[in-house]
Amino acid sequence: MDQPQTPKTAAVLVIGDEILSGRTQDTNTAYIARFLGSLGIDLKEGRVVGDDQAEIVAALNALRARYDFVFTTGGIGPTHDDITADAIAAAFGVGIDFHPEAMRLLEARYAPGEFNDMRKRMARVPLGASLVRNSVSAAPGFHIGNVFVLAGVPMIMRAMLEAIEPLLPRGVVVHSATVSAEVPEGKVAGGLAAIQKDNPDVALGSYPFYRDQGYGVQLVARGRDAAAVEKAAQAIEAMLRELGAAPVRL
Amino acid sequence: MDQPQTPKTAAVLVIGDEILSGRTQDTNTAYIARFLGSLGIDLKEGRVVGDDQAEIVAALNALRARYDFVFTTGGIGPTHDDITADAIAAAFGVGIDFHPEAMRLLEARYAPGEFNDMRKRMARVPLGASLVRNSVSAAPGFHIGNVFVLAGVPMIMRAMLEAIEPLLPRGVVVHSATVSAEVPEGKVAGGLAAIQKDNPDVALGSYPFYRDQGYGVQLVARGRDAAAVEKAAQAIEAMLRELGAAPVRL
Image (cartoon, rainbow over all chains, first blue to last red; front, side, top):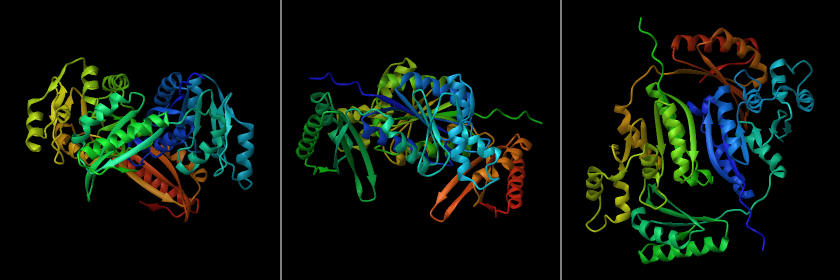
């Protein structure tokens, strides 16, 4: 039997003042998390920093040293506040220049005379980087080393993920089972801890919810061994029935 | 004239495997960002880590050393995966014990015999911490040093923010003005860069949008001097009109 593969790890670095001001709700982290999950890659950390080169460089260098992959979102547009490409080049200690293929892609997009200097900024990528194309817009992202530099606009970011999917390794995916019950979390906590002890290869999480129609808890079992996840989920259902609650598998 | 006060800074540390798996969309960071904005405190960084003590300790110690305040969300419930209180105690190098007032609050909440050992876990706080009460549930958060430890459930987290509002300093708030126009971002980028140069005390951001009805850009001016923000916003409107676009102030 093959040795089980160590799961690949990843981090997301969200770049943009608009996230830190609360103006824009980041949804890219959750989307990338699910995308990586489908490939069997574990998202281990997320960070948000503003449009500040020193902050971007420090965060990126910490994350790329620690995880197999880093995905950044934001800051690759044409305006003066789009400084991600320069920051990535600085983090890698490489130069930055107009990428010939990016120039061609962008030039083809605009009417004659419309490909102005600011738009040309979008063709600047760190030396040694490869382009990440997308099906939505001409402006590419890029990847360098273990870092993928993606757009902040969700629609474009998602198209870029599609484009890089063939470049990423596949691991064993994490299976999950969710059991919901209208029971207070504190009532199931003891039984859940016992089930966790009996099922060390499965991670059990407990997520209380409060809705107009009432409250309850969703109990989630996650793990790379589908049979072990199912066994834990069934133990959770049995525990809930013993407490007089009606478990619902989601 | 008084010297302008240096703005206070803050970080948010979101704790929970459910965020990193993409199961749950974090909305607490954006909410805390806006809450801090209303007090004139600058959110400078956000992080997300899983339910892992070493990760929580490392992130918390990095953030609390660097920023005036740190707000954590998640991991303070009754179940075995709620390890935030222990992690905070470890980060501060202090012990942890049942807090008498927290015990009273929780005990009063439950029917006789229902205040079980797992629920008592919610009364454990690091030594030296003060409780953060909330109007929604009996289980308190706490604060220790410059760190505020809040619930992950948004409704409860928001009630806890209300409770700590009197403890936080007030600074000069950041004003913002948003001008929207149905014009490609690349067309305004040059004019915007020039306006940024003329208005160094205002931060100008450019946020393209794509909708079914068309695309455009929102240009945002932010700064602590309301008159300077207004001046920059008017310069943006004039620039847009010169380009033949119809600016809309949001």
